[in-house]
Length: 101
Ligand SMILES: [Zn+2]
Image (cartoon, rainbow, N blue to C red; front, side, top):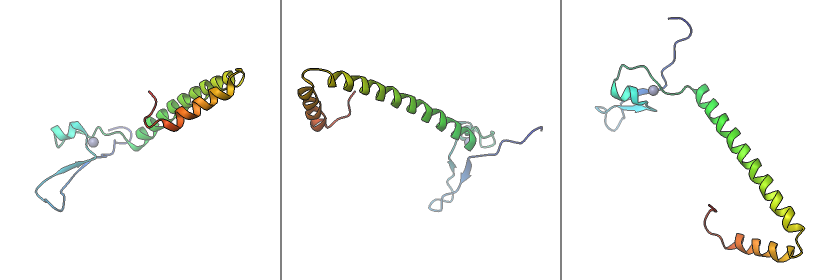
């Protein structure tokens, strides 16, 4: 085999409360079907890459929302009824129990 072998991430564990049982931790479907199958669990490096990608997506989403809120706030601030509009927004915010859609 060339290169570094992929390390197994999941392993069959015999729980102390039931030594005859086997739990696959964390477990991948390939090994559930076949005990001797190669592990297909993501490596820590792969999981880190996925987490970093998701953080970048969420950061971009947050930045877009901040930009949108800034635009709305700027427009309201320039409106003649700004005080009543901000008061209405505050009332809405204080009474909401659920997350906005
Ligand atoms: Zn696995």
